[in-house]
Amino acid sequence: MVQLKKLANETIIYGGTTIIGRLLNYLLVPFHTYIFLNPQTYGVVGEMYAWVALFMVLLTYGMETAFFRFSSMESNPHKVFSSTFWTLTITSTLFIIIGLVFSQSIADVLQYSRHPEYIRWFVIILSLDAVSTIPFARLRAENRPLRFASIKIFNIIATVFFNIFFLWFCPMMIRNGIGLGFFSAIYHPEIGVGYIFISNLIASCLQMLMLLSTCKGLRFTIDILLIKRMLKYAMPLLILGLAGIVNETIDRILIKNLSADSLEAAMYNVGVYSACFKIAVIMSLFIQAFRYSAEPFFFAQYKQKDAKEAYAMIMKYFVIVCSFIFLATTLYLDFIKYFVSKPYHEGLHIVPPLLLAYMMLGIVYNLSIWYKLTGQTKYGAYISLGGAAVTLGVNFLLIPRIGYTGAALAHVITYACMMIASYLLGQKHYPIAYDLKKIGFYVCTSVALFVLSYYLIPFDYFGKHQTLVQTIVNTAILLFYVYIIYKKEYKTLKKVLQS
Image (tube, rainbow, N blue to C red):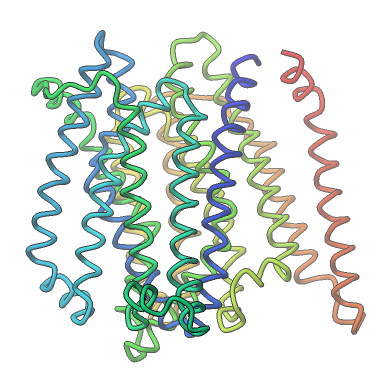
């Protein structure tokens, strides 16, 4: 109970600050969709950041998790930090050189021949962010969540600030004839969505400068034998990460390339899908915050005699929170939809299945701890590779037929398969007595209540009072679900709070 309370406190610190930061960044979604009213233009953003996610995994190649494992095992954690930091710095520098030299060729392949600067900006962003993962991992390993969170929030604030500055403030000043010489020199309308990327670049540079102060004990040495051992541990995680990114982001790229429509229409669909997909990020905010605190906790708890009991309890409460987020988001989707402008509303039907998909992905993260703890990371690679195969197969099957709706369904099918596979393998190699009865009850109840509100209650009957009645009824449904949780979990929660 004490350890569970400690994890909850750290999740609140990581989660509260991470969610605040992500919410600030989340506000860029309506900002961008109201600035770029044509989804085709916003589709560029969706596709480019899909590539960013893919290459970020390649550039970190599993070394973040390897750092956690080896820094806790080695007698000299400073040696682990220095070796890992400089190894990533070398590979990231090589990536910058290659990207800058071949920027035009890469832009031609991606059908952005007129914008090779996109490639140049992103290779620098990716390299800086890849190197920064190790200082951030060190902060987490040393249980310094406030320092970690403050730098993360600063990065988000800087990103938001420069987006607003370039995309709103500069055009406004020019329209009003204020400071024409200065603002005309730094703002050029033809750059358009490029200012989103420039803002990211500036924020990444500032973040790296802030992280330098956390590199205490950094030495200009690389322990080759140590790095070889770390790479052996990390390589399956790289495969796992690549497969995971295929599962999570390849759909934006495939919608563009598998659509039977013209390139312009395909990019329009990418824009709609990307904007509505970000509404489901509400679920991933919690999952990300949980992962930041949970992964070091799981490793630290591993040798305790009640470790498996703690893991089972954590899984149950994780699912409870996720099911509540799913229900709250879907019940109030008629209000949440205004985070994106009206041209994007045609894709709102993909939000509920994407929320369920994210919930299952979070369960997969919890289940995956068995192969990370036991060092059998190859199983994680197998599961993710299988998931990637399902993702590609379902997307190739459905996108040409039902467009981006098929991409959303692919997420649900993929993560369901990965969840089942991870559970079955985990019970074989590292059995944990998860409370499947309660977990299934909470998930099914939240889905059933959503279906009741969305499909079975005839709100249209109330005419002009529809919105008011629907809000009152949905609030009652949500409070009813909270009451169910309270009745079933009161005794356990009381023990946690008193511990």
